Image 1: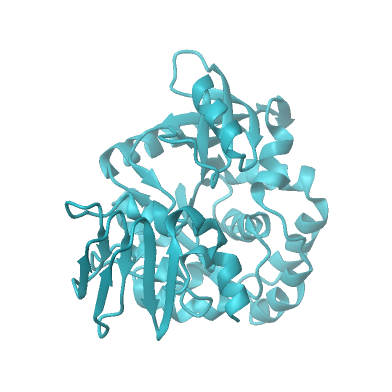
Image 2: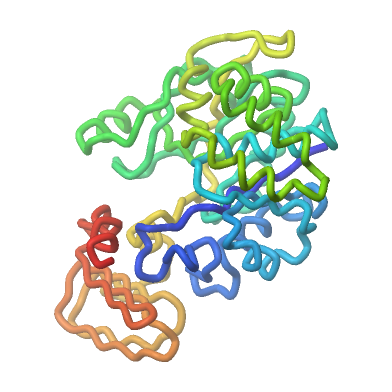
Amino acid sequence: MNHLVIMAGGVGSRFWPMSRPENPKQFIDVLGVGRTLIQLTVDRFGKEFAPENIWVVTSAKYADKVKAQLPEVPSANILLEPCMRNTAPCIAYVTWKIKQIDPEATLVISPADHFVVNTEEFRRVINAGVNFVKGTSNILTLGMFPTRPDTGYGYIQAGDKEGQSEVCQVRAFKEKPQLEVAKQYLSEGNYYWNAGLFIWDAATAEASLREFEPETSALFDKMSESFGKENERAVIDELFPQCKSISIDYAVMERMSGKTMTMNGKDAGVYVMPSDFGWSDLGTWGSLYTQLDKDEHGNAVVGKQNVCIIESNDCIVRASDNVKMVLQGLDGYIVAEDNNTILVCKKEEEQRIKQFSESFK
């Protein structure tokens, strides 16, 4: 069976002050459309996954939010992390869980807080990706066609195409680059944004984690002995914090890129499917700005129109429902208010918002 895994444990620090640790962006109606980002994530997969095959991995403190916003997902499929340990332990947790009930499972891994314009094309790509990995030990990532030399994304360097398919071998994963390097990537034409969306069989996920992260795998072997038992929560709370904090990119993807290995008796490699379905990770106010309707002066307002903008250009503005705001004489600014906290920041300086929020504390 195919299983959808939604990673929903982040805090969205670059969306401060709207996104905060107690209420991060995945649980907020960021776009002002009446659905939160995690709800939109489930929506875009349509009916491709039955509710019993949808899994959410999140922080224990967000359990009630997930249950309230995704009532169709069984409580047993909401896996609660006692602390943040990045994406490799997150994926190990859900992999060990699913393998107990469906050893032949195929996993589609998705962040909870991304945005997609063309859901029909998105579903076509997901289905094609699932068909590509079925019966193999391959790992497939989705690479987004870059529209600008963005320094806020990691990049995937693609190699040769795999036969007549849409899929290419991955040569390398690249960290967030400096601007000049990002411009070079775009000019070369075979670099794609790393969207953090990938597809693999549960058996491949387990084998690769055992190969590259044996200590973490051993911990989940111990934890899995308690799955479905009365002491499960206590065991997870005790052992999960002992996992090394590491991303799945560092733990597996980068170590396998450009290589062919043997896993479960089959050749295994990392591949990328270049994709174009109007994707944004909505990681910053600037990325949200690109998705919103704008007035004739390039200004965008999130949510209700309780904002008056005068003699200003290219701004993004957000205010709470009970707050009225007047702006005059601003060019290229983020102005955001939430819970009596106001941020006024140049859009070009948005990568510093996490630093600003920490200083504010």
